[in-house]
Amino acid sequence: MNLVFDLIAQLALMGVAQTANKTFYMPPQASASAAHVDWLFDLILWISVFFFVLIVILMVMFIVKYRVKDPNAEGPRIYHNTPLEITWTAIPLAIVVVIFWLGFKGYMDLAVPPANAYEIQVTGQKWKWLFTYPNGYVDEILHVPSDRPVTLVMTSTDVIHAMYIPAFRAKTDVMPGRYTKIWFDATEPGTYPLFCAEYCGTGHSAMITEVLVHGPGEFETWMDEAANWIATMAPEEAGLKLYSMLGCQQCHSTTGAAGIGPTWAGLFGSERKMKDGSTIVADENYIRQSILEPQAEIVAGFDPVMPTFQGRIKDDGIAALIAYMKSLQ
Image (cartoon, rainbow, N blue to C red; front, side):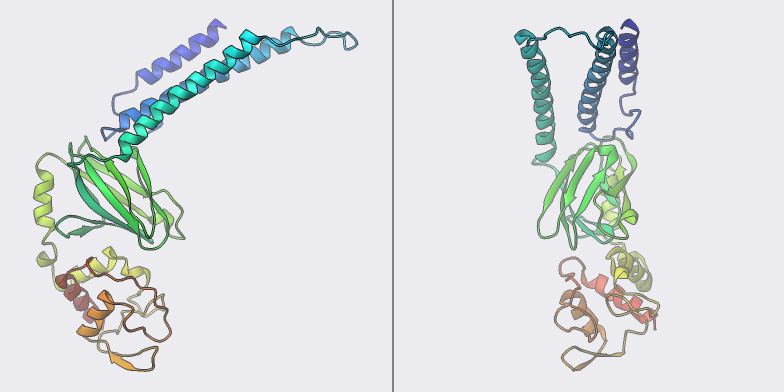
């Protein structure tokens, strides 16, 4: 018995000896709420270990002590023990109540963002993440400041996704037709992985990006530079980046291959036959309308499944996409 309790004590000391921002089974803690999540996880783990070991020891002891020596002998009559039954009911109940209270408190802390949190809009789609900042800039990588609360307001354009940042211990479903929120306070500048934790189709495993936490003063500098990124690139290059950033490649190929939507290879300047039988030349105005009002004119042979990009792309972005399409002639 002493050997077992010594083993439990050594395991507990191993848990206490873990560094402040890293555990044996989880990535480094990089947010203010990560410590509470890990502490509660460890509490439940060691309670489970303690009772597992205790039950196994008692089970082995009873098997040895009360084993049947004479199969024909009548065993002793065993009656209930009220104090014992109250004890083994009250102790687990008290433990469960404490765990529930600690878990609910932590959940409410994570569910209610601070009023002064910096807000970023998040769009999940097959199979990428898009992050829209207050100045209208859109990026595939999540950039956040350190030591400042950040709220992500999230929605999906297609199916259910799940935002998961292991280093922040943050995970929330992202659903079409509604908004969900998640917030965190990143404490350590650096780069951390961001995953989709809800199976969302064949490209689910590739729905991976990064969280880049900027040090004090660096986020504002990056934001000023990022806001004008289209102006710093050639139109064709900016269009190619938008083609990937906005998820256009999921439906429109650039090689002539058939897809959910028409291929962009040779698209500009060509005549397109519509579902209503009319013919339209794919010029600048047609492409602009197709981006902002995709249901206005439906090409024959394709379903009206393209979402609108109204409010998600500015005029300079549309011009860059048109320039990229022209380069594919």
